[in-house]
Length: 281
Image 1: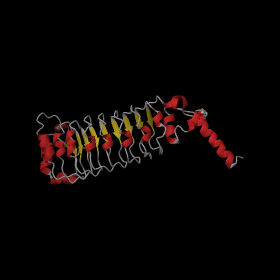
Image 2: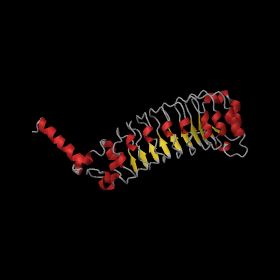
Image 3: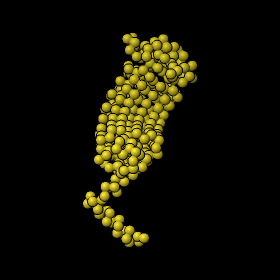
Image 4: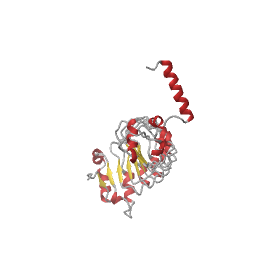
């Protein structure tokens, strides 16, 4: 039986060996992914070790292109920094809060971290090649780290805590934007994102929708659960679409109550081909 003094001596020797690079590979590998649920997801991408329990080494994961592990109870991303070729991460519905381990994965193009426990997205500010970003159902209050993500084409960030969408105005390639369920003070600035095709602003406390006047590519607009004062900005924009570029293809979702209150506006929208609350097929 090892006594306390012997145990401390052994640990000191192991620490010294590790610092000198002499720690056995099997011991070092065990700590590559401290979160074993994450390790299991990564192991699936390492074909040579998919069905065994051999330790995963940094060399094994440096070229894998994706990690998928939805609803696996993952709490830590530690170790993913060794997956330098990752282009896709899908780790939705877990318990992740710290994004620092993926901060240098510059090849990432698709990230799904929805339904986690994320408060800060500062660590991913440098992932400027990201095109698809799904961060819905977290606790994010500040979008400023996204200001340089100019390659984003799809951003899903519903049910968080931010009040301003201004930080994403540099993402001119955006065609899908879903920000429902956030306490937005104003979204007038969205008019700058003229390429938007899908916009979801449900339950954002919106009274004015002037932003729609400049969206000439819009094909899906979801605005339910908002105290909208008037639909006139949308009506005027659709009626001005004499080339029938977008109005006949627009699907609009609004509250049934609003349809009753603004029946004239609804009739005018229908006249130019707008589909009001169409059934989902």
